[in-house]
Image (tube, rainbow, N blue to C red; front, top):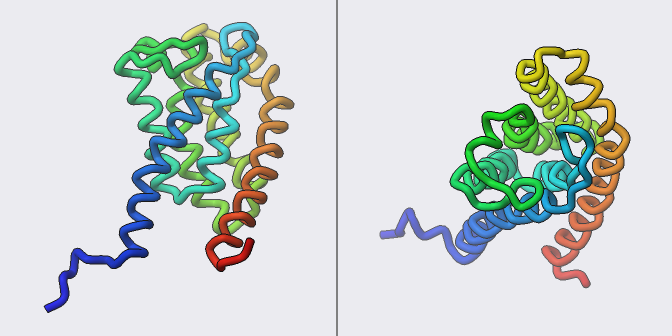
Length: 185
């Protein structure tokens, strides 16, 4: 009788890859948070680069889970947020909307990239981060206009640059991964 839980070597390797890749992207996002340039209440970091990459390179559930793991690590106090900070305050404060949008964005990017190109899916993911982040920031500071001025406008060009870098990296990694998969060098 065949063991239904035995997926074979390829299935086990795929499962191990999934188990390893989720914390890897959480860790990369944490590293990206430490590369920060302060701009008002919201620092410019490389977090969004890794949100894009998780969506471009992982499946929707894995991409979302990696960002949820990142938020969980920060919530329990590990210094994974900008400026080596952590704690639940980051997830309820003025800029918390940007953080909470990461899992949603990563999921949508991964889901949409199946039907559209990576840049378009990244634009949708970025819009989600901006809308949720701007809304929460506006609630906290009492002005959506001011929140847009300080929480969206300064970041648009740099975030689009991150999107294009992530797209190039994802295209290159996809070619490398596909080449190895088919035994090419």
